[in-house]
Image (cartoon, rainbow, N blue to C red):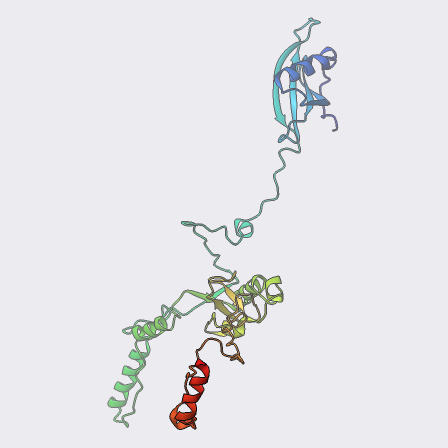
Length: 308
């Protein structure tokens, strides 16, 4: 660190040589081991000198210990005047000022915060509110012009023309309000493109999730379509298990929660067994009479042989 620039007056010799006294005072006021090398001195006046020492304490980069010593007139003993910790020339350099609109990041807006927009915001453009239309009873309104033209036709005895009656200002405003057009400013093409680029970067086909997805969102049943030109490239995800739930996603985006990617198959039906062991087949002990049985005499003789 370069030595501090001295003033025009020459510092007092005895005060300038009292470096050890100044260091001992700084080490007594500071924590152990935070007083660095001697960083110069400056003359504060007649027989008044301030010595600077580097500060090694964390969080105080660029600060210096300033120890002021002095001596009385015709005295040879230097005494201690003051010990303070002061910021150096680098410590007061604040970072370059950045407007709040450039410091703001997505997600910084919290409950109760207001985010004003500039009058010349490139993301917005003037919309239709109906305020530029003259009142119906104004001399320059379309209604009054039609009435004046009709009166002129009657006075000049000309053919009565069918004068189209323009809709009133109230009806135009009502239709504009119904169509969502009655706003002071609407989204411009630039604002639409920047929003689309931002959404595609977060939930687009180039993300790692989309690269590993089994299919894209355009074929997913959880995709809710949106109207307007955005619907040609984006939709809203409605799958609660997807990382993009409730977000605007690109139609080329995809994730593992695709509706058709993991359809649970039905359990396969086993093939019928060759020998059915689950049922009981009845076998009669005696054959039926109508199935060609042996005569009764033979049956009796067989029984006698069995007993013998």
